Length: 80
Image (cartoon, rainbow, N blue to C red; front, side, top):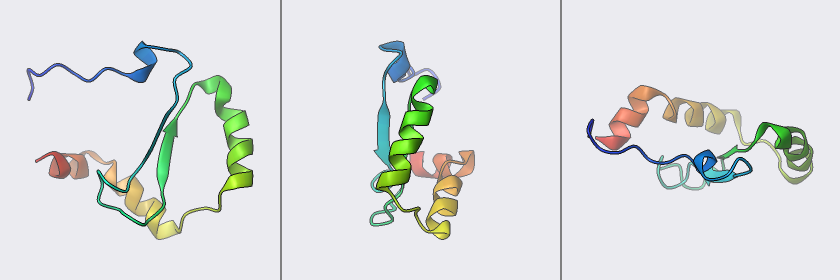
């Protein structure tokens, strides 16, 4: 797929875009209740304050597995 067009970034359409997703489907981590968020820098503090009042941390094992799933070797395996 080296000659395929790249996917557009949400920030190409709006500097105030928010992208919220989870690891459940794509990374086959259903039920682990771990996700990620991409947001503009100016929203970092308000999002952190909100997050502190809404969520309890995912288990350490889930967090480490999610980080491993983002590594190039894991991405290559998923896209093979």
